[in-house]
Image (cartoon, rainbow, N blue to C red; front, side):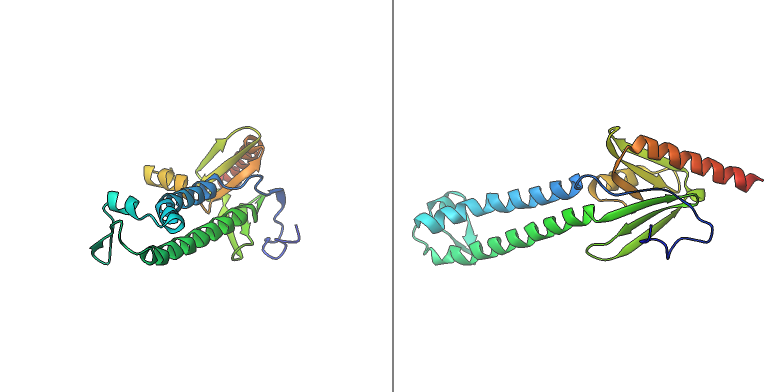
Length: 198
């Protein structure tokens, strides 16, 4: 509660707070894809560096500096590429680890007026979603852990597709009992609309 005390409006009440319970599957998928792709390209290079046999590159019709690599090509040609791939492996591995950590370093609050999403890592950022302007509440996942996403309008195909490939800023991701939170959000929205009508 102390974390958002400075951003709460006068009289605003916190109804619920939570944190992600799982690492984002998107982060894991991107990271594994990048690491597997780099590993596939690294295997022939590692084989050539360890055995000195460049024939695998000849079979693959590899060219370096516009010259076709043959079995007689010196092994030193491969070392710079191997170092570059090792560097990329470390960079992508580090980026994946950072993304996975950042997906856990979020906090969520639901008040009687809005949903608040606060990220601490790698940069501090706070997103506030006005519940009175929320028209679609979408829940995904299971009963135990899932995601609740808030949309100001009916989400189109593009925003649904983009939600598959990134963590939307308007999502309470990997929370416990998402069904209960969805009902709490819908009840809060209904109460806000009722107050607007009076």
